[in-house]
Image 1 (cartoon, rainbow, N blue to C red):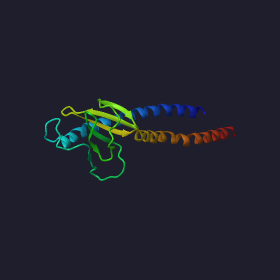
Image 2 (tube, rainbow, N blue to C red; image 1 turned 45 degrees about the vertical axis):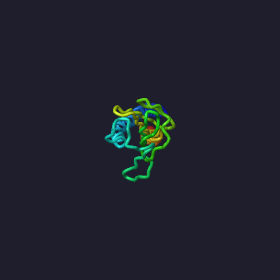
Image 3 (cartoon, rainbow, N blue to C red; image 1 turned 30 degrees about the horizontal axis):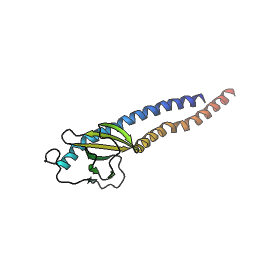
Image 4 (cartoon, rainbow, N blue to C red; image 1 turned 120 degrees about the vertical axis):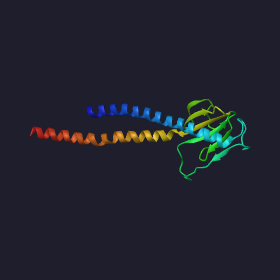
Length: 170
C-alpha cells in the first residue's frame, strides 16, 4: 500500500504539471492563431479601403471551411467592431458575440477559453475561442496514460511479492 500511496501522490504532481503545460500550449495556440487570422480577416473585410471603412459588407459575415469538414472544430473566432458587433466569424462559430470584454488578453466564459487581440490599424478586435472541454479531454487522456500502468503494475507487484516471499520461505 505504501507503493500505491507514493505512486498516487507522484501521479497527482504529474497530473498538475501536465495540466499546467497543456494550458500553456493551448494558450499559445490561441495567441498564434489570433496573430495569423487577424491580418487575413482585416484584409477580407476592409481590403484596400481606409481604416474604419468596410467594403460595404453589412453585419455578420461567415468564412466557410476550405476543407468542407463538418466535424466540430476546436477553434472559433469572431472579428468584432469596437461596439461589439460581429463583423466576421468562422463557419462553425455562433452568431452571438462572445460574452467577453473586448480588452486584450485571456478570459473564460460560457465553457470557452477566449483570447482577445485588438487590431492596430483598424477599429476591430479579434476573439479566438477554444472549448474548455477540449482541454479537459486532452488532460484526462494524459492522466489515463499515466494511471493505466498503475492499475496493472500494483496487482502484478503484489503477486510478485507474495510469490517471492513464499519461494524464499521454502
